[in-house]
Length: 405
Length: 138
Ligand SMILES: Cc1ncc(COP(=O)(O)O)c(C=O)c1O
Image (cartoon, rainbow over all chains, first blue to last red; front, top):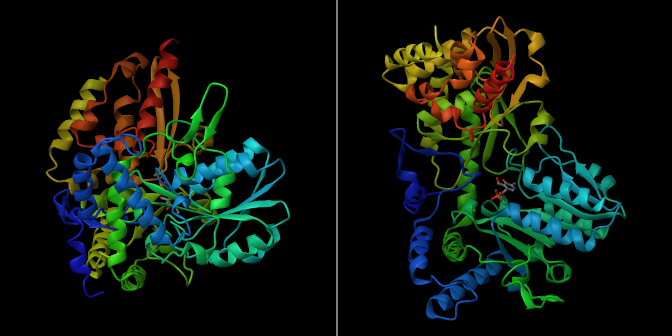
């Protein structure tokens, strides 16, 4: 992409030094850097719109409500949802999934019902379902993946039964990078009468999302993985399901009327937004969406893919390297191990050279178990990363390797 | 030697390094030289799990002194484990309980001992003290 260098200027965090070295940021799948426009909007709004959203009747409260609700419109438009009240603000992907696991579970799940997840899910798309199954006496089933990191769809077919109520899978794996065929997964589930939740945490910046085309029932993502603020996430849910579902938390703003005899709940979306949300962050999130709308997303994805191929070609030369996740259809992240270089040791030293990478079990124990490894290293790219940074990373890895020999 | 003296000795050793590369090269050397734990001690009950690395710890009590055996799968962690064993092993439980771990921050390795750093080291120090506590009443 011709204006990679240009794009870097929008992210003040990229030009800092760490341990006295220029930062090379390769941990974008964990969290991206934040846009200057988001930071500016936040510091402006925290002064100019500092009234309690939906409640304070004064000018500052009106401004808070306006900027908060504008963001809801922006999100609706961004993912092409049918209704604005299908957009629920949460703290992040994790809270969005927990909301569904609780509220959908309470409303629709009975003993003996079945939930399907995949073997490549982030813990946040496993544990809430285990908790729900425990609570409701439901059964959790798992779609396995092959060693390249592709879900075994034949196995999926045989897991789907009349008792399947919900399928929860990730659109893109945060460890393997696999772009899953969610359209197919959703269609098969719907044919059996099951609902589908898509974990969109990774996909939201690597794929154009059109909710109505995908036709999933729930979709969850986090603002901090798309250049936006921390502490903000989105749950999209189909109107008729959200209408039927029990509230997740009780409190202010989610009610219609409260007496000690009986409380009636409010309408969507506030029914699921109890308490004062992080309204300043939510409002500043709209700047991240503006930014993504303003750039050429296909060009960004193509640049990221080139970075991925380049990194693979380069790192392949390192003796003893193993890549995990080699699907033909993958997003721009690379997980690997190197014989004789423990991920923790490597991360500790490479950090001192200015490189931010992820190591460990990456909130995905089942993937570690699949390959029989204790931990991995991962580099993950954003459109602002460059080929030079990959060259520097390669040299740094070799330098560290020497320290271990 | 007393715990305090050993700690001072370590701080002095590390003062000789002027950059992080030398410091970590030394830790890697220490880690490489750490005697493997007897296999019978390297069992699941002795494991301290972290997301980033694993540490095994085994303790024995003989003639008024604690003896610790420890190991890790990451070499830098092993280097720090070697330092901790040098400080705490073959010491009376009472001294271990009273000992501070300030020397770790003095040699600039406190980031590895922070309880939120899931490499098993912070939990190892805690476990060392728990064993000492158990035998301090012996
Ligand atoms: C695939 C996937 N799902 C869920 C999450 C959880 O997101 P958050 O921690 O923002 O709630 C992540 C983030 O690491 C992820 O990569």
